[in-house]
Length: 123
Image (cartoon, rainbow, N blue to C red):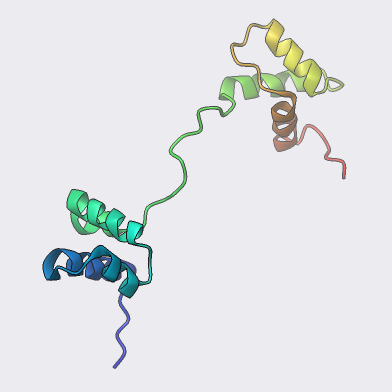
């Protein structure tokens, strides 16, 4: 009879082999079909959080420090609505004159305008 183990059970089996049975990390990794660094990561997470540490984690970053602030984005949209003929270069220049600390680049301003459908994308 074939028994299918879920992901956490498979990871726990590899961790248990290393901790309880004295199997080397390399052997446990080969049986699990993963790199030995992966088994070492599972061991660290199991030691820190128990079984909950073996659950899949998101690889998405928690934040994006260089992301355009909502205030700057709102001001770009407002300026574009007031002056429909202004492009990214002029909008960036205006933001600089208004005293914004970090003025985004032209391509970032362009993407902002596209995101808010204030510019038509040309092929």
